[in-house]
Structures are given as structure tokens and as C-alpha cells.
Amino acid sequence: MRKRKIRKDDEVIVLTGRDKGKRGAVLRVVTRTDRVLVEGVNVTKRHVKPTQADPQGGIVEREAPVHISNVALIDPESDRPTRVRYKTLEDGRKVRVAARSGEVIDV
Image 1 (cartoon, rainbow, N blue to C red):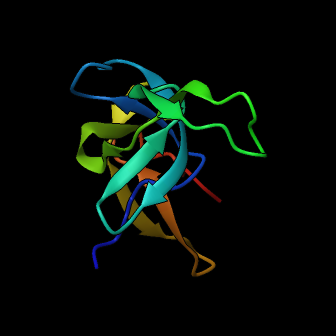
Image 2: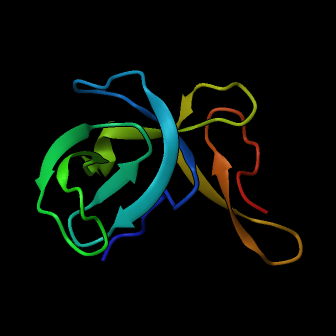
């Protein structure tokens, strides 16, 4: 399996497709299909049968997964899309670093 450079709760921007330019937080990473679920992006309508949990049923809007190659992490310093690199700190911890600015993404 490949290393995923985008994780849950990361702020990302959509690079291609119908929702190009939209930003949102990653809600879930689907590792099996290399897809991510981004808040407010790729919203689709689903017809839902009434259940005990949802007695109304009807048409529900949900986010659908987007391929991980179509999103990019947002650089915390410049607020622009960036790639991710890895760096080992002096204390031995391995952290993600924004390739654009060199700033540590998660500590």
C-alpha cells in the first residue's frame, strides 16, 4: 500500500472537475480506492427510503468521494495548494512539511 499524504481534518482545495477551486476539510480517507470525502464538495442527491431512524425519507444531499489526485493540501503559510514532503525533526519525530513554504503541517 502507498503512503497517503492527505489525512482526515486536513484543509484541501479541489484541483479539477465540477467543483474546481472549492475548499473544505477532509471528512474521511478511503484507502482502498484512493479517494477522500471532502466537506461541501461533490454533493450528490440520493433517494432514501423511510426508516425508523428517518421516518420522512425523501431526497438527501450527501458528499461523494473524490479521487485523492484531484485535491491538494492548502499551505498554512501562503494559503495556496502545495505538495507534501516529510522531514525528521531533531527530536526524531517524522512530520509532514508543506513543499511550497517548508512549514510543518502537523506537530
